[in-house]
Amino acid sequence: MATKPTKVTISFDNDRAPVELPVLSGTLGNDVIDIRKLGKHGIYTYDPGFLSTASCSSDITFINGEEGNLYHRGYPIEQLAENANFLEVAHLLIKGDLPNAKEKKNFSLAIERHTMLHDQMLNVFRGFRRDAHPMAVIVSVVGAMAAFYPEQTNVTDPKLREIAALRLLAKAPTIAAWSYKYTIGQPFVYPQNKLSYAENFLYMMFATPCEEYVVSPILAKAFERILILHADHEQNASTSTVRLVGSSGANPFACIAAGIASLWGPAHGGANEATLKMLDEIGDVSCIDEYIARAKDKNDSFRLMGFGHRVYRNMDPRAAIMRKTCHEVLNELGLHDDPMFKLAMRLEKIALEDEYFVKRKLYPNVDFYSGIVMRAMGIPNSMFTAIFALARTAGWIAQWNEMHTDSSNKIGRPRQLYTGEAKRDFVPIDDRK
Image 1 (spheres, rainbow, N blue to C red):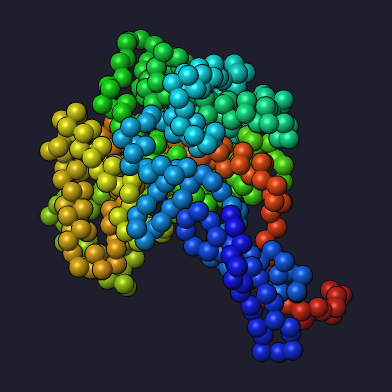
Image 2: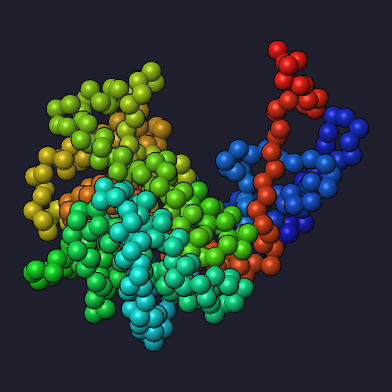
């Protein structure tokens, strides 16, 4: 990060003196105005949702929404999804580089050593109602890890932070899969260290003690891509939550649990689930024209889910990868004649050709395809956001760790524009009107 020779001067219409602020440039992306000293001049900025505010500097992920680019440590997401596995991407995010052969082996072994949960954590699961939402269980179990691994709550020790990171990443598939098993009344299936990260999750999700279960390589590869495509996405709501909670010095388990809670919000992590609900509502290809007309009607509350993206003003780069994966999975499972898939493909065609959607850049996004893929794999809607959390744990850990190595890090303390009552005096209750 460098200061540009140019500066920005803020002038006022009153007697207040002008304020001069430096401009900073990153490796890629827009320049930013450094407003850190603005408060000393008795003025703050107003930016609801922080849509124009850089809350930190980061080396991890870069998005160019106009061009449809997503880079992790400089590597395009397309190359990573095609050539790497999820643990390689996790290593890249957390440690800064893709691992060589020895590093990859050691990192994988370190993850394997931590896949099991403390046996007493079974009691945490059993404290929930059987119909508890998996995300409610996951938030609680991840937060409870601080009680089982208290030595990792010292965030000032880099070695302890590394162990906590490995534990979180390794145990996330077990926690997610067990949250599903618990809600359907099946016994927990323990991880198998001979399996890959993606294979292990699918095994714990679908295997039972009474018969052998073999994970399909095609489905494992598809799930690997889902994890890679959702591993990190810059300073979104959940990542910002992890950083804000972490800025107070909170333990890593509490920080990741907070990120999971933020992700649980339907405006953030529930998009793929909402997409399938929309497809269920439309029901049949013959009804598409009616719903397309409703989507175009600004007075109708119906909205097409899985189209457009808050960040991307071009095609979501992850969507093209997931579209290819969608076809691979459906071919593997013999589901290309599935009515839901035909409905989805018809919607996709309209979105890519209809002037209304093209003009507004409402392209199919990654959630449009990932929901279809996961349903085809037998993963229920209630687990979609849980899998998102499983994937994003790698990014949250990387962002949390980076924050702790940033010398400019301070406890988060946003300002406000106060619009309430001015000072007024207390009135005794008998005198109040």
